[in-house]
Length: 249
Image (tube, rainbow, N blue to C red; front, top):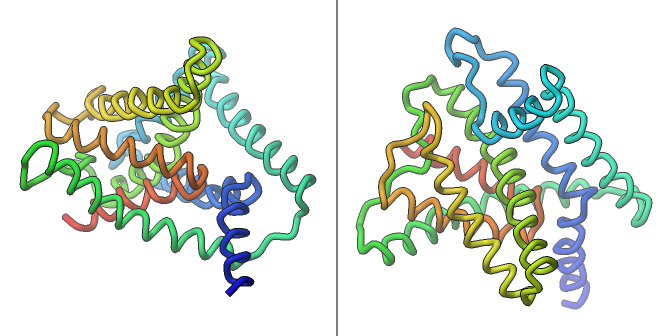
């Protein structure tokens, strides 16, 4: 019993480390960028995930036409530095089974996410039906798959890694709030902005209280997954959840 407990504890800790968490997210990045590259422009009309576009636009504003290249270099550079630093500190031996276990956990969390968020939203609104989170039915199947994969990667990078973490640091260090209060503040504000993001732009959904509430609650759940399980599992959970919604229709 004790060896199993120790193995479970090791899995819980190591799956959150950069060398596992970030490497686990690499295939997600590869799948998304491959689809962006190979899908015919006539079908996708140059569509990418909105969070990806927003991040690249920010860097384009700073560096002009070299902005997207700068963004990609920074993404790979910072991620690579974190992986190398973690590998030097804890060793480079990687267990293949651990990546498989992480994917299994992400599948389970994606299934649970839809159930839990749906039930909570129904309790909050007193509703018996919920609107889908992503409304991109006007595009072909592969474009929708590409957008779903990008949502897991770039929306979690933008809203969980950058926004929630940034809000937490501001509340804790600048406003001198207690860590727990700062965490609740960051998670709630991040979830509201995450939900509102889906109604912005030419491809945004029509606003509805039910879908806004659903997405805000999902944002809170994803923040909890990010804080407890790390970026890799969080990103794959979001991507798999969006794919489940896509194929459940």
